[in-house]
Image (cartoon, rainbow, N blue to C red; front, side, top):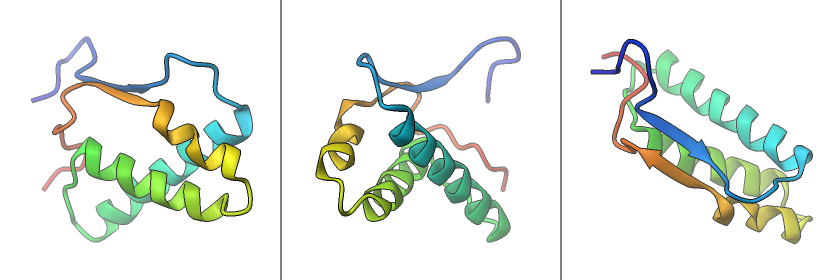
Amino acid sequence: MPKKNGMDVVVASPFPIEVSYGVILTGAFIEAAEAAYSKKRNPTVLELFNTAAATAADRLRDQAELKEKVLEFVIVGDHGMRLCKD
């Protein structure tokens, strides 16, 4: 159960991330969550992140240096947390 006044999970990078990559990854994460919600699926944060990372890599297929930025992210906290309700 999520905390009322706190954070259970954070997806972050300890390194500077190019804005263009951050925008693409964030948009892909939101799209993955919306798609799961519309299909009444309940993925974990890790599953959503992996889906978003794959989508971002596909969109950046011609930019190898940006595609690998996903490796600089960590999931801190409960990576098994589910954001969508059953």
